[in-house]
Length: 368
Ligand code: NPG
Image (cartoon, protein in one colour):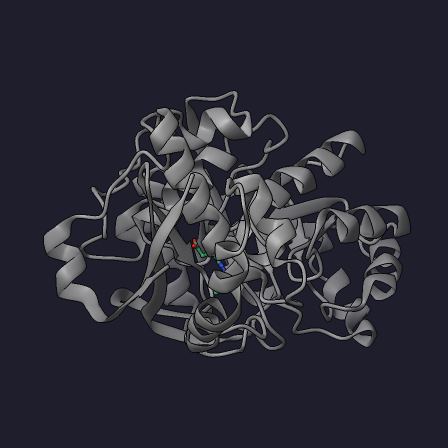
Protein backbone atom coordinates (compact mmCIF):
# COMPACT_ATOMS: atom_id res chain seq x y z
CA UNK A 1 0.00 0.00 0.00
CA UNK A 2 1.34 3.43 -0.85
CA UNK A 3 0.46 6.40 1.29
CA UNK A 4 -0.49 9.45 -0.80
CA UNK A 5 -1.42 11.86 1.95
CA UNK A 6 -3.10 12.40 5.29
CA UNK A 7 -5.86 14.81 6.18
CA UNK A 8 -5.97 16.16 9.74
CA UNK A 9 -9.48 17.26 10.58
CA UNK A 10 -10.70 18.82 13.81
CA UNK A 11 -14.34 18.49 14.68
CA UNK A 12 -16.28 19.97 17.58
CA UNK A 13 -19.21 17.82 18.64
CA UNK A 14 -21.49 19.26 21.31
CA UNK A 15 -22.32 16.71 24.05
CA UNK A 16 -25.99 16.28 24.95
CA UNK A 17 -25.02 17.00 28.58
CA UNK A 18 -21.77 17.90 30.35
CA UNK A 19 -19.72 14.85 31.43
CA UNK A 20 -17.92 15.28 34.77
CA UNK A 21 -15.33 12.91 36.22
CA UNK A 22 -12.54 13.25 38.76
CA UNK A 23 -10.36 14.29 35.80
CA UNK A 24 -12.51 17.23 34.65
CA UNK A 25 -15.68 18.26 32.79
CA UNK A 26 -16.27 17.85 29.05
CA UNK A 27 -19.03 19.83 27.34
CA UNK A 28 -17.94 19.56 23.71
CA UNK A 29 -15.98 16.72 22.20
CA UNK A 30 -13.07 18.34 20.36
CA UNK A 31 -11.82 15.47 18.20
CA UNK A 32 -8.85 15.04 15.88
CA UNK A 33 -9.71 12.78 12.94
CA UNK A 34 -7.14 11.40 10.54
CA UNK A 35 -8.04 10.35 7.00
CA UNK A 36 -5.25 8.50 5.24
CA UNK A 37 -5.36 8.28 1.48
CA UNK A 38 -3.48 5.39 -0.12
CA UNK A 39 -3.24 4.15 -3.68
CA UNK A 40 -5.81 1.48 -2.78
CA UNK A 41 -8.34 2.93 -0.34
CA UNK A 42 -8.92 5.58 2.30
CA UNK A 43 -9.05 4.99 6.01
CA UNK A 44 -10.22 6.86 9.12
CA UNK A 45 -8.71 7.06 12.58
CA UNK A 46 -10.22 8.93 15.52
CA UNK A 47 -7.83 10.28 18.13
CA UNK A 48 -9.27 9.95 21.63
CA UNK A 49 -7.16 12.70 23.21
CA UNK A 50 -9.39 15.28 24.93
CA UNK A 51 -9.13 19.05 24.52
CA UNK A 52 -6.99 19.31 27.67
CA UNK A 53 -4.32 17.09 29.30
CA UNK A 54 -6.41 16.04 32.32
CA UNK A 55 -7.33 12.40 31.80
CA UNK A 56 -3.96 11.77 30.14
CA UNK A 57 -0.95 13.90 29.26
CA UNK A 58 -2.09 13.91 25.62
CA UNK A 59 -4.50 16.50 24.23
CA UNK A 60 -5.94 17.11 20.77
CA UNK A 61 -3.74 20.03 19.74
CA UNK A 62 -0.57 18.22 20.82
CA UNK A 63 -1.72 15.07 19.03
CA UNK A 64 -2.19 17.05 15.81
CA UNK A 65 1.28 18.50 16.23
CA UNK A 66 3.04 15.19 16.82
CA UNK A 67 1.15 13.54 13.96
CA UNK A 68 2.14 16.34 11.59
CA UNK A 69 5.75 16.77 12.68
CA UNK A 70 6.87 13.28 13.58
CA UNK A 71 4.42 10.45 12.96
CA UNK A 72 3.52 11.06 9.33
CA UNK A 73 7.17 11.51 8.28
CA UNK A 74 8.06 8.26 10.09
CA UNK A 75 5.29 6.32 8.37
CA UNK A 76 6.05 7.94 5.02
CA UNK A 77 9.61 6.59 5.24
CA UNK A 78 8.38 2.98 5.69
CA UNK A 79 9.01 0.99 2.51
CA UNK A 80 6.15 -1.56 2.68
CA UNK A 81 3.32 0.11 4.53
CA UNK A 82 0.70 -1.95 6.31
CA UNK A 83 -0.90 -1.55 9.72
CA UNK A 84 1.49 -4.03 11.34
CA UNK A 85 4.46 -1.90 10.26
CA UNK A 86 3.08 1.30 11.81
CA UNK A 87 3.96 0.67 15.49
CA UNK A 88 7.55 -0.26 14.60
CA UNK A 89 7.90 2.82 12.38
CA UNK A 90 6.59 5.03 15.21
CA UNK A 91 8.60 3.41 18.02
CA UNK A 92 11.40 6.03 17.91
CA UNK A 93 8.80 8.60 19.03
CA UNK A 94 8.27 8.24 22.79
CA UNK A 95 4.76 8.23 24.22
CA UNK A 96 1.91 9.87 22.29
CA UNK A 97 0.03 6.60 22.25
CA UNK A 98 -3.33 8.18 21.44
CA UNK A 99 -1.89 9.94 18.39
CA UNK A 100 -0.12 6.75 17.30
CA UNK A 101 -3.31 4.74 17.75
CA UNK A 102 -5.25 7.12 15.50
CA UNK A 103 -2.70 6.81 12.70
CA UNK A 104 -2.44 3.02 12.97
CA UNK A 105 -6.24 2.76 12.99
CA UNK A 106 -6.52 4.86 9.84
CA UNK A 107 -3.89 2.73 8.06
CA UNK A 108 -5.60 -0.47 9.21
CA UNK A 109 -8.97 0.84 8.03
CA UNK A 110 -7.56 1.65 4.58
CA UNK A 111 -5.90 -1.76 4.35
CA UNK A 112 -9.01 -3.66 5.41
CA UNK A 113 -11.28 -1.61 3.12
CA UNK A 114 -8.95 -2.42 0.22
CA UNK A 115 -9.13 -6.12 1.09
CA UNK A 116 -12.85 -6.13 1.88
CA UNK A 117 -12.34 -7.36 5.46
CA UNK A 118 -13.84 -5.96 8.66
CA UNK A 119 -12.12 -4.84 11.86
CA UNK A 120 -14.07 -7.51 13.72
CA UNK A 121 -12.79 -10.25 11.43
CA UNK A 122 -9.22 -8.94 11.57
CA UNK A 123 -9.16 -8.66 15.37
CA UNK A 124 -10.73 -12.06 15.98
CA UNK A 125 -14.28 -11.20 17.01
CA UNK A 126 -16.49 -14.09 18.06
CA UNK A 127 -19.77 -12.23 18.62
CA UNK A 128 -22.17 -10.44 16.28
CA UNK A 129 -23.36 -8.03 18.97
CA UNK A 130 -21.90 -6.73 22.22
CA UNK A 131 -23.54 -5.96 25.58
CA UNK A 132 -23.55 -2.27 26.49
CA UNK A 133 -22.86 -0.46 29.70
CA UNK A 134 -23.17 3.23 30.35
CA UNK A 135 -20.88 5.56 32.28
CA UNK A 136 -22.55 8.22 34.40
CA UNK A 137 -20.57 11.30 35.33
CA UNK A 138 -20.54 13.05 38.70
CA UNK A 139 -23.86 14.89 39.03
CA UNK A 140 -24.96 17.65 41.35
CA UNK A 141 -27.42 15.68 43.46
CA UNK A 142 -28.48 12.13 44.34
CA UNK A 143 -31.93 12.87 42.91
CA UNK A 144 -30.43 13.76 39.56
CA UNK A 145 -28.34 10.57 39.66
CA UNK A 146 -31.34 8.36 40.41
CA UNK A 147 -33.22 9.91 37.47
CA UNK A 148 -30.24 9.36 35.17
CA UNK A 149 -29.74 5.71 36.21
CA UNK A 150 -33.47 5.04 35.84
CA UNK A 151 -33.46 6.51 32.34
CA UNK A 152 -30.50 4.41 31.20
CA UNK A 153 -31.93 1.21 32.69
CA UNK A 154 -35.23 1.94 30.89
CA UNK A 155 -33.26 2.42 27.66
CA UNK A 156 -31.87 -1.10 28.14
CA UNK A 157 -28.29 -0.57 29.32
CA UNK A 158 -27.05 -3.77 30.93
CA UNK A 159 -24.51 -2.28 33.32
CA UNK A 160 -24.13 1.04 35.11
CA UNK A 161 -20.81 2.70 35.91
CA UNK A 162 -20.75 5.60 38.34
CA UNK A 163 -17.91 8.07 38.36
CA UNK A 164 -16.74 8.61 41.91
CA UNK A 165 -14.39 11.03 43.70
CA UNK A 166 -13.81 11.87 47.37
CA UNK A 167 -17.12 13.31 48.62
CA UNK A 168 -19.18 11.45 45.94
CA UNK A 169 -18.68 7.74 46.54
CA UNK A 170 -20.53 5.71 49.18
CA UNK A 171 -23.70 7.84 49.15
CA UNK A 172 -24.40 7.62 45.41
CA UNK A 173 -23.61 3.88 45.38
CA UNK A 174 -25.90 3.24 48.35
CA UNK A 175 -28.68 5.33 46.79
CA UNK A 176 -28.49 3.48 43.46
CA UNK A 177 -28.48 0.06 45.16
CA UNK A 178 -31.41 1.01 47.41
CA UNK A 179 -33.48 2.35 44.53
CA UNK A 180 -32.68 -0.22 41.80
CA UNK A 181 -31.84 -3.35 43.79
CA UNK A 182 -29.13 -5.96 43.98
CA UNK A 183 -29.52 -7.30 40.43
CA UNK A 184 -28.23 -4.23 38.59
CA UNK A 185 -24.66 -4.74 37.36
CA UNK A 186 -22.94 -1.79 39.02
CA UNK A 187 -19.32 -0.59 39.06
CA UNK A 188 -17.46 2.60 39.93
CA UNK A 189 -14.63 4.58 38.35
CA UNK A 190 -12.38 6.79 40.48
CA UNK A 191 -10.05 8.09 37.74
CA UNK A 192 -7.09 7.94 40.14
CA UNK A 193 -8.71 10.34 42.63
CA UNK A 194 -7.82 8.45 45.84
CA UNK A 195 -4.67 7.87 47.88
CA UNK A 196 -3.51 4.67 49.60
CA UNK A 197 -4.57 6.22 52.90
CA UNK A 198 -8.19 6.18 51.65
CA UNK A 199 -8.35 2.37 51.83
CA UNK A 200 -10.77 2.46 54.77
CA UNK A 201 -13.14 4.79 52.93
CA UNK A 202 -12.99 2.61 49.79
CA UNK A 203 -13.71 -0.48 51.93
CA UNK A 204 -17.04 1.16 52.77
CA UNK A 205 -18.07 0.29 49.19
CA UNK A 206 -17.59 -3.45 49.94
CA UNK A 207 -21.17 -4.16 51.06
CA UNK A 208 -22.65 -2.97 47.76
CA UNK A 209 -21.51 -5.91 45.65
CA UNK A 210 -19.87 -3.87 42.93
CA UNK A 211 -18.50 -5.62 39.85
CA UNK A 212 -15.28 -3.64 40.26
CA UNK A 213 -13.65 -0.36 41.26
CA UNK A 214 -11.73 1.19 38.41
CA UNK A 215 -8.40 2.98 38.89
CA UNK A 216 -8.74 4.13 42.49
CA UNK A 217 -5.09 5.24 42.82
CA UNK A 218 -2.48 7.05 40.75
CA UNK A 219 -1.52 5.76 37.33
CA UNK A 220 2.02 4.78 38.38
CA UNK A 221 1.05 3.17 41.70
CA UNK A 222 0.87 -0.53 40.87
CA UNK A 223 2.09 -1.59 44.30
CA UNK A 224 -0.47 0.69 45.93
CA UNK A 225 -3.22 -1.03 43.96
CA UNK A 226 -1.84 -4.44 44.97
CA UNK A 227 -1.94 -3.41 48.66
CA UNK A 228 -5.40 -1.92 48.31
CA UNK A 229 -6.67 -5.10 46.66
CA UNK A 230 -5.83 -6.95 49.91
CA UNK A 231 -7.84 -4.48 51.99
CA UNK A 232 -11.09 -4.29 50.03
CA UNK A 233 -13.35 -7.01 48.64
CA UNK A 234 -14.44 -5.07 45.52
CA UNK A 235 -12.28 -6.32 42.61
CA UNK A 236 -9.71 -3.75 41.48
CA UNK A 237 -9.73 -2.89 37.76
CA UNK A 238 -7.01 -0.81 36.12
CA UNK A 239 -7.48 1.73 33.33
CA UNK A 240 -4.93 4.59 33.28
CA UNK A 241 -2.14 2.31 34.61
CA UNK A 242 -2.36 -0.12 31.69
CA UNK A 243 -0.40 1.45 28.85
CA UNK A 244 0.71 -1.74 27.03
CA UNK A 245 0.50 -5.52 27.10
CA UNK A 246 3.73 -5.42 29.13
CA UNK A 247 2.30 -3.18 31.86
CA UNK A 248 -0.76 -5.44 31.92
CA UNK A 249 1.49 -8.46 32.53
CA UNK A 250 3.37 -6.59 35.29
CA UNK A 251 0.17 -5.43 36.98
CA UNK A 252 -1.23 -8.95 36.94
CA UNK A 253 2.01 -10.44 38.33
CA UNK A 254 1.97 -7.89 41.17
CA UNK A 255 -1.66 -8.62 42.03
CA UNK A 256 -2.54 -5.00 41.25
CA UNK A 257 -5.72 -5.84 39.35
CA UNK A 258 -8.32 -8.57 38.87
CA UNK A 259 -9.92 -6.95 35.80
CA UNK A 260 -8.60 -4.70 33.02
CA UNK A 261 -10.29 -1.90 31.07
CA UNK A 262 -8.92 -2.04 27.51
CA UNK A 263 -8.80 1.29 25.67
CA UNK A 264 -7.05 1.17 22.31
CA UNK A 265 -6.06 4.85 22.44
CA UNK A 266 -4.42 4.41 25.83
CA UNK A 267 -2.24 1.50 24.66
CA UNK A 268 -1.27 2.82 21.22
CA UNK A 269 -3.79 1.09 18.96
CA UNK A 270 -6.09 -1.84 18.30
CA UNK A 271 -3.25 -4.28 17.62
CA UNK A 272 -1.71 -3.64 21.06
CA UNK A 273 -5.22 -3.63 22.59
CA UNK A 274 -5.67 -7.15 21.27
CA UNK A 275 -2.35 -8.13 22.92
CA UNK A 276 -3.59 -6.71 26.24
CA UNK A 277 -6.71 -8.85 25.78
CA UNK A 278 -4.54 -11.89 25.05
CA UNK A 279 -2.31 -11.40 28.11
CA UNK A 280 -5.35 -11.02 30.36
CA UNK A 281 -7.07 -14.03 28.81
CA UNK A 282 -3.95 -16.14 29.37
CA UNK A 283 -4.09 -15.22 33.07
CA UNK A 284 -7.84 -15.74 33.35
CA UNK A 285 -8.63 -12.04 33.87
CA UNK A 286 -11.83 -10.66 32.37
CA UNK A 287 -11.51 -7.49 30.31
CA UNK A 288 -13.99 -4.91 29.04
CA UNK A 289 -13.77 -2.17 26.46
CA UNK A 290 -13.45 1.37 27.77
CA UNK A 291 -14.72 4.45 25.98
CA UNK A 292 -13.56 8.02 25.55
CA UNK A 293 -16.67 9.71 24.21
CA UNK A 294 -15.94 8.48 20.69
CA UNK A 295 -17.93 9.49 17.63
CA UNK A 296 -19.38 6.72 15.48
CA UNK A 297 -15.99 6.21 13.81
CA UNK A 298 -14.17 5.33 17.01
CA UNK A 299 -17.21 3.55 18.41
CA UNK A 300 -17.33 1.19 15.40
CA UNK A 301 -13.80 -0.01 16.11
CA UNK A 302 -14.49 -0.34 19.85
CA UNK A 303 -17.55 -2.47 19.18
CA UNK A 304 -15.44 -4.77 16.98
CA UNK A 305 -12.80 -5.10 19.72
CA UNK A 306 -15.43 -5.76 22.39
CA UNK A 307 -16.57 -8.78 20.35
CA UNK A 308 -13.34 -10.67 21.17
CA UNK A 309 -13.77 -13.70 23.45
CA UNK A 310 -12.08 -12.29 26.57
CA UNK A 311 -14.40 -9.26 26.72
CA UNK A 312 -16.76 -10.95 29.15
CA UNK A 313 -17.99 -7.80 30.91
CA UNK A 314 -20.17 -5.11 29.29
CA UNK A 315 -18.06 -2.20 28.05
CA UNK A 316 -18.38 1.59 28.18
CA UNK A 317 -19.99 1.24 24.80
CA UNK A 318 -23.09 3.35 24.58
CA UNK A 319 -25.44 4.21 21.78
CA UNK A 320 -24.66 7.40 19.86
CA UNK A 321 -27.50 9.32 21.55
CA UNK A 322 -25.87 8.88 25.00
CA UNK A 323 -23.44 11.61 23.92
CA UNK A 324 -24.48 13.23 20.65
CA UNK A 325 -27.75 14.57 19.23
CA UNK A 326 -26.25 13.87 15.78
CA UNK A 327 -23.39 11.42 15.37
CA UNK A 328 -20.76 11.66 12.63
CA UNK A 329 -21.86 8.31 11.20
CA UNK A 330 -25.21 6.57 10.98
CA UNK A 331 -26.10 6.34 14.67
CA UNK A 332 -25.38 3.30 16.82
CA UNK A 333 -28.74 2.36 18.32
CA UNK A 334 -29.21 0.09 21.32
CA UNK A 335 -31.09 -3.14 20.56
CA UNK A 336 -32.03 -5.07 23.63
CA UNK A 337 -29.04 -3.59 25.50
CA UNK A 338 -26.60 -4.51 22.73
CA UNK A 339 -24.93 -2.89 19.73
CA UNK A 340 -24.43 -4.81 16.49
CA UNK A 341 -20.81 -5.40 15.43
CA UNK A 342 -20.21 -3.70 12.06
CA UNK A 343 -19.50 -6.31 9.41
CA UNK A 344 -18.63 -4.16 6.37
CA UNK A 345 -15.08 -3.56 5.13
CA UNK A 346 -12.77 -1.73 7.54
CA UNK A 347 -14.62 0.12 10.28
CA UNK A 348 -17.84 -0.68 8.45
CA UNK A 349 -19.11 2.89 8.87
CA UNK A 350 -18.59 6.16 6.99
CA UNK A 351 -18.79 9.75 8.18
CA UNK A 352 -21.95 11.45 6.91
CA UNK A 353 -20.62 14.19 4.63
CA UNK A 354 -23.17 16.85 5.67
CA UNK A 355 -22.65 16.27 9.38
CA UNK A 356 -18.89 16.13 9.01
CA UNK A 357 -18.82 19.50 7.23
CA UNK A 358 -21.07 21.06 9.81
CA UNK A 359 -18.91 20.11 12.81
CA UNK A 360 -15.51 20.59 11.19
CA UNK A 361 -13.49 23.45 12.66
CA UNK A 362 -10.26 22.97 10.68
CA UNK A 363 -8.75 20.74 8.01
CA UNK A 364 -5.21 20.35 6.82
CA UNK A 365 -4.07 18.18 3.90
CA UNK A 366 -0.54 16.81 4.11
CA UNK A 367 0.48 15.32 0.74
CA UNK A 368 3.35 12.84 0.60
O1 NPG B 1 -18.83 5.93 27.19
O2 NPG B 1 -17.28 6.71 25.91
C1 NPG B 1 -17.79 6.57 27.01
C2 NPG B 1 -17.12 7.23 28.19
C3 NPG B 1 -16.77 6.27 29.28
O3 NPG B 1 -16.39 7.06 31.47
C4 NPG B 1 -15.95 6.92 30.35
N1 NPG B 1 -14.73 7.31 30.00
O4 NPG B 1 -12.25 7.56 32.52
O5 NPG B 1 -12.98 5.90 31.40
C5 NPG B 1 -12.97 7.09 31.64
C6 NPG B 1 -13.86 8.03 30.88
C7 NPG B 1 -13.19 9.07 30.08
C8 NPG B 1 -13.96 10.06 29.57
C9 NPG B 1 -11.86 9.06 29.85
C10 NPG B 1 -13.40 11.05 28.84
C11 NPG B 1 -11.31 10.04 29.10
C12 NPG B 1 -12.06 11.04 28.61
